[in-house]
Image (cartoon, rainbow, N blue to C red; front, side, top):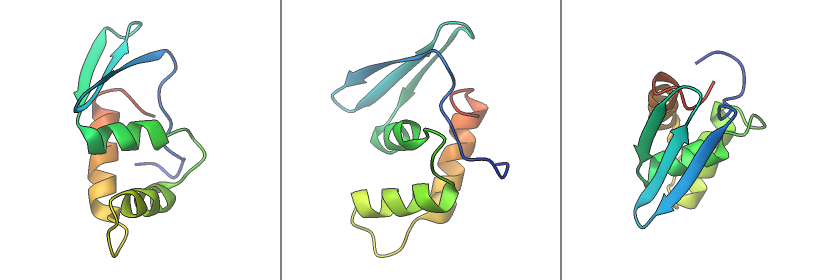
Length: 86
């Protein structure tokens, strides 16, 4: 990931499901299913938080002792590879 704060791509439409979300980016012809953790990362990636802040938020949401920095980075990379965040 670059030094910029991760941010959702413009035009992403979100449909909530019982166990995650479906993200549809019409312009790019992409559809992706995100599990609850991926959904949290996607929704928190609004451009206002850096990776450390995102990891801290995930750690708080899941009541973890330490922020899951590496797992957060891995999740953000997957979202970026899917074209859902920049």
